[in-house]
Image 1 (cartoon, rainbow, N blue to C red):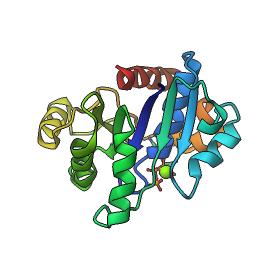
Image 2: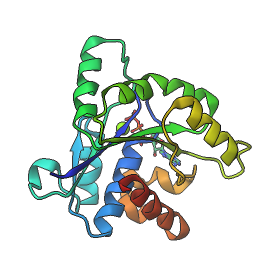
Image 3: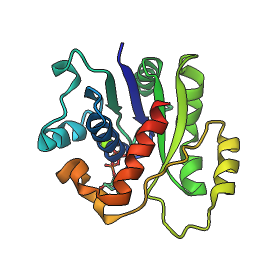
Image 4: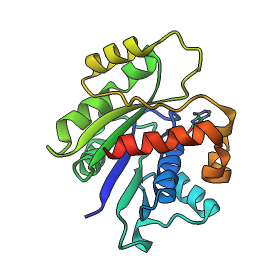
Amino acid sequence: MPLKITFLNQKGGVGKSTSSVLIGAALSAAGYQVAFEDTDSQGSLTMWTDKIGKLPMVHECPLAEVIICDTPGRIDLNQEEHEGFFRTIIQSSDRLVIVSEKSLFSTQASIPMIEMVKKYMRDEAKGMILFNKVRQRTLVGRQDELEMAQDLGLPVLKNSLPLAAAYENVQIEGFTAVLGKNREKIFSLALEILK
Ligand SMILES: Nc1ncnc2c1ncn2[C@@H]1O[C@H](COP(=O)(O)OP(=O)(O)OP(=O)(O)O)[C@@H](O)[C@H]1O
Ligand SMILES: [Mg+2]
């Protein structure tokens, strides 16, 4: 059975699709057979992978070792149909990565999805929070991250993604948009998610 890594947040624009492409590309570069599953009806990830070229969709790759699953944002989890949609996805995932910007406001807005993940994830699955668009000179330090994690009830990944213009081009250029030290960070992040 492939390991399924799902990126979630009912909030829009936090970087679910960007993280999906980067982590998928990093694991593929590290030698894993990676396939994408795009559950966003807007199909943004499908569009991106077409441009990047190398990364197959799940139906094209029966021998995938890792499935990267991108999910839609701008969702009201109180609506029953949305609840059911996410419940099914959560129950079928091995890693549940809630992508959030690193601010009190953004983490508070992520709580409905965090609660849903805690409620429905399988016993052997792992839930985690990924901070994206992190400002380098943020006043929120490591200590606050740990406190936030305690409050939210899911671990925060040590590796985060910085706010950087290069990441805006991921949708056009794929992994090649990110170079040098930032690229190394994405490999570390990918391995941390797999652990
Ligand atoms: N680390 C980053 N630095 C700068 N820009 C970023 C970063 N991550 C994402 N972005 C930009 O933010 C916007 C939203 O990112 P993305 O589409 O990945 O979010 P999403 O959560 O998938 O959104 P949606 O809920 O609409 O599917 C995009 O324009 C993207 O290029
Ligand atoms: Mg998206």
